[in-house]
Image 1: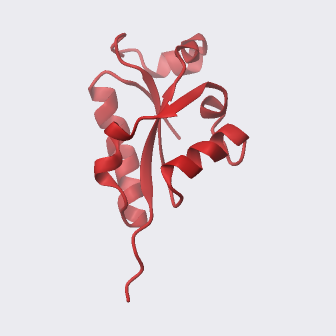
Image 2: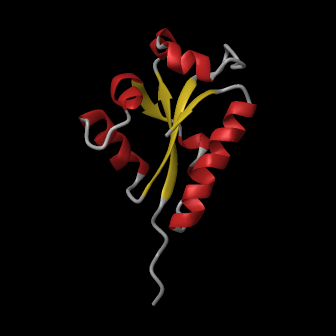
Length: 108
C-alpha cells in the first residue's frame, strides 16, 4: 500500500513588531500596510505541531519563535497534505504568491 502523503505547507502570522527588524523590513519593500507579516514553511508534521516547535525553540526560525502569533490556515489548508517534493515547491510558490498579494513574507 502506498505511503500516505504527510507533508504540509503552513503560514504563520507574525506580530507587527517584526517591522522593527531592518532585515525583515528591507526584504519586504512593497508590502501592503493593510496585510499582515507572515512566515511560510513546510513540514512533515502537522502545521499545529510545527508551530508549537517553533514557539518552543525546537528547530525554530528566530522570527517565528519571537514574533509568531497564529497559524493562518485559510492561506494554506487547501493544499495539504502532499508529497515531500510538492511541499518543497509549494513553500516557495506560496511565499511568492503571498508577496505578490502584498503580504510581507519571510520564508527560510
